[in-house]
Length: 637
Ligand code: SF4
Image (cartoon, rainbow, N blue to C red; front, side, top):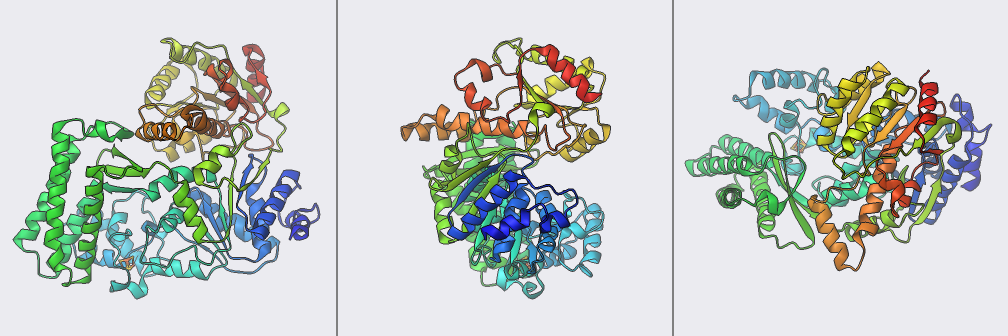
């Protein structure tokens, strides 16, 4: 395959004929050769390809040339769409290779005919929901794939979506009266028949963790599994190898059970009272949990006696629901599914309350309308390794950020792939011309005047760049403080996370061309603003996980017990990978120019700072503000 790959990437090869502006890049063809070798040897490969390498073509070409069945998993739905609609068909055509391709989304994206029928019969829906439901019903008459994205004018977060789509828990599977026409089943069948299937990580891990049974699995039969944006794997795998119980699940269970019982003529007072009591217990727990953002340690969430009492009351009420549903299992398929859901949730709730699962960490999350009680494994390596071992495919993990200080140990240890081959490809960008890294003299980040100093320096830099800037923070409090202060200091629009949706903020930022965007975690990665609109990326602090984070605390204890050094072996590599992601927002193309600023002086004053510096793209470093200000003026001119 090596020769075929070389031919494909040659200056006069098929890619150059098919893609206008194609120029051979040594990093890209070298990565393609590494992928080809992994496919041939079926050895796992961990590959870091810096922005600009062209990693998508570098894995697509050998996978397509191999003619083997391939599963590609991307980080987001947007990337999944881009790959399926643009990159994959274009590459396949360029290589003149046949074969079927398919895109498979999570089941919440597809119409569930059974639930739509139920919703249409539900007289208690609000007029607003009913209007959207009618819209879905009209579209359902002519859709060809059941993908709810096709319903014109239906927002991504429209509440009706929940009414007309299924979850792994509420799906009736083969017992469903609409099974033969089921769109989820149809999409899975097409995916199974395809040669190349594009999924996203949530779907891949639901499949790996066997969290979505009842339908055929995705992985059997795949010869090649390519996991792009692989740096997200540890976090997502943790979610899927763990479990959760949420207010939403319990409320849905109550609603579905009541409806199914009414349809079967079995909604007696005992059942209705039990469902009502469970719903009230959910509401009571929701009121008693501390309403603070982010992950809460279990001990903090249930520190108060009323919260603990509410949890125990919920456990008891949910057990009663199980008892009431059990004798109704034979009455209808819908009631059987409800009863099974109740049993599964009951087991989870009991394990969570008991805390007996010592390999997991318990934590809670409370939003405006929902709470989730979660249990996440401390280590996913063994589970993930075992799942991979079940599928003897060539596994390729690719991302722009996997190595820390040139080493892959952290990532490989996290996913249990210590023996995987590794490869690292630098960016082809001309950083000497395109970029600078500015490390200004700053107070210690714990000093009381630190934020004032950040505002002072940031305002001066924004003036020089005439906007076009991101200020990436590590807390919402910092976002608010910086956002407010900068609005008073600079002459360009300041956009602040939390004031509009992420999508709307990015749209406003790109359209304006000279705006400043102040944001936290969700803007550190997966944000692509090529061109002049983004010419200054400022980073407030080294992005260490908050010491109060329950997952971090549990992992620190776990690593200590293993004789490891948590700061060196987990916190630094984790933060360095996040920093690398943030830094990666700046230079997205050969014509981009700009300055990366890291205010946190620990990067050059501490011993561990080197691990961060060595993980960043090799921009020329500057500590003096005057050359940086003039570089910014030049870039923004
Ligand atoms: S099989 Fe599941 S997803 Fe399909 S229509 Fe029935 S309940 Fe809905």
